[in-house]
Length: 229
Image (tube, rainbow, N blue to C red):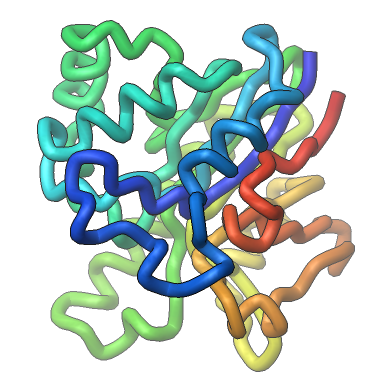
């Protein structure tokens, strides 16, 4: 049994005009590379999917991508990304998964899951590029509330956190989110969103007791990164 994380699969099986292969060799044959990358994962393992999973514009439009993800080994917990336009209420998403037999897909949003005795917390997070957009302060505060709700749901358990947006990178820190991670004693924070040339901006390693790890699919070679046994 092992815990893995990967983000930003950007699948487009139902919307082939949005395939990431247009971005060059780094994304060539990325669906096949994802399938091969999951080969070390066992059905007894857990995989956190850190957002931006499908280009589908609604649940039905993302159905083929969900089918692909469900077919891969491991139980998968999904965090919202900024390009997950298909996102809906947890009740509607869970009903859609059940109706389509996607038994290995679960939602990590306003809640926490457990991997043994370790709590798995998460939310989309926040990114500076959102500042100045309509109602950004309200949305930002809502993300802080969601993250804290997830962390509180973990109780006294050891906590790992999974975000889509990086809480920090070279030249940027989201102080409010980092403060929550540190206050609740999060041991590891995995995040995605950064691609291609932006990989050089990633901050990885321990800072103030939190181990930060970038798990964007193109950064980890389309292989889920093992977080713990």
